[in-house]
Length: 520
Image (cartoon, rainbow, N blue to C red; front, side, top):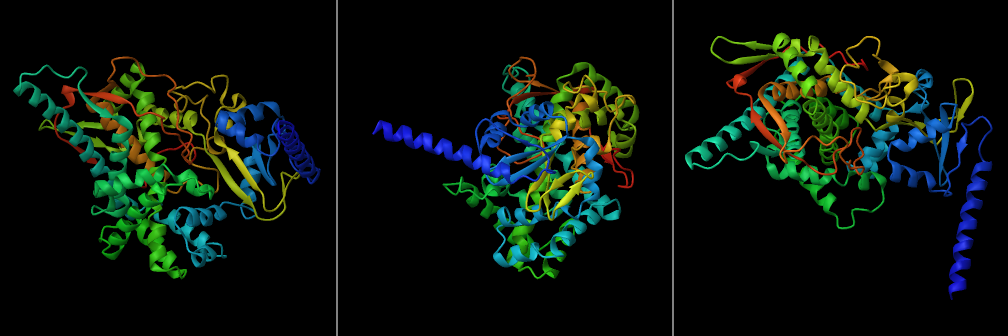
């Protein structure tokens, strides 16, 4: 019996290597170099699981061409780690298309019916949908209104946090208790998720949004934990917990859409219009609208989380950012109150913006994906065969010393301030690869810098354990997002800065005053 098992195992190994060899023979001589893995057929998948985004760095350093092929079963995944090739990829945006990804998301996350799936795969729906989102998030009065609702809610949630701190101090004094060591405590990822959910939702849905219900908010994050399982098409959600949570979000959106408030954003209304005009049923429209929070929250939360982490863990940088904010963006009013000038925050606080963008650079792991719609000759010499996929892993580009210099692997708070260190455009992929940059980047960036500025001025944050900030916290590789969440939430102590106690307001700017992002 043992011999049979050994022979069977040996036979499977032989077949796997034989299959790999046969598949390699199918490569055209002009296709990018196919990189062999030690384990046939699935070796590259194992490498990505084991090493995460650094796997692309290892492959990048082992090749010279800037583009290579990864064979995964019978699929080919062309991988470009060359900034030089990005303009060529951009010029081929019709044949190297992002739009099929919208159809895939609509099916897997939005539970699209067969009819809706066919409409998304048609010649117009996905492109019209993408265009509507881009135009409705462009600077203008509609985005001004969205930003104002978002900013006011962000201000409210930080004020609520300060109230909780003061109330705890008053209770302890009344009961003559010793003050809790280190101050009021929050689970920071949990708090970040809540404050971003509420602020973003106020901006996009209006003040009567679905996530005012804590059960719906919690259901979204439960669903979020299963997004990778759902997008894969494999039934990893065996207990159906993710689908049950998603249904709660669907139900909340059904209720919202039946009585859509007048302050719903142009973004929400335009998405609805395009879907309905395309012939998609109201039921499926609601489901597709319920996927909006994935794009709205999934990356904003961890980017905000790590920006705060990187800033508050560097005392000298934090002090400099506070000085910058006090001099440029904070207005002391006669009645002892304070106002945060958002226009000045965007345009006159380069160090804060640099910390934010450097956080994106070192934390970004996403690979921009394009489907090869027809045989395409890239840069006049690399043949990409139709039906396969092209990816551009941001981490491999953001950590490349030829682009970012010898300190590419280090966090440099001033990297985007110092002219000789600055990079941008195709060197910086935190918001995607042109021409498919995230349409909400100005909205999300404005939200993050408002929240970070308010925290920097009003509180001290430190690990509640009393120790130092952990340098490299373990990451959760399960989420299909551009910036990974921490594997474990961290408890932080919140200590008010008494000189900045008082009422705060926002002086909102017009959206034509843009955050000067490196990506444009």
